[in-house]
Amino acid sequence: MSRMDVKMDTRSEYLAVLNEHHARSGMSLREVAAACDLDHSYVSYILSGARRPRRDVIIALGFAYSLELGDVDEILLLAGYPPLGRGSRREFSQSLQQKQPA
Image 1 (cartoon, one colour):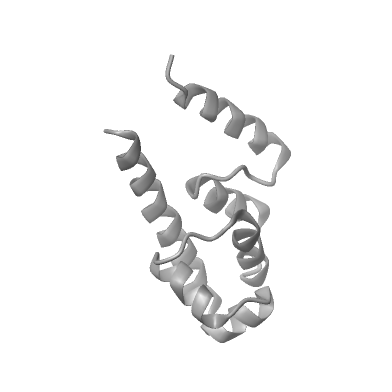
Image 2 (cartoon, rainbow, N blue to C red):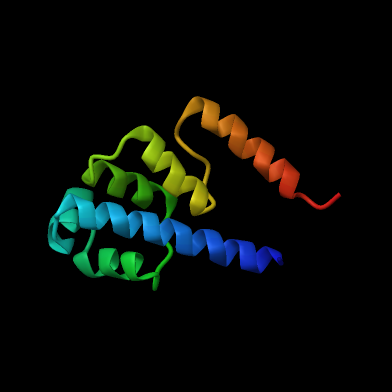
């Protein structure tokens, strides 16, 4: 599997997880957008996969959905960003080192 395939796999995974949390929240796009201080169309683009959110936007979405730290870390890792949790940062650094070509 190529690096591009891995990126696409994790991208679809983080979108699936993010959409699952959105559905579970019962919040409308406008409610989520207001909670994150974002435009509702931008949130729609994120959840559809048309736009890749920055790390801070994923964190804001996590707060809007009232997610646990571990859930936010999972989404961040799947999206290719470093997690918030202390122990998770070490794991993220190690995973980056393992992905580096020798």
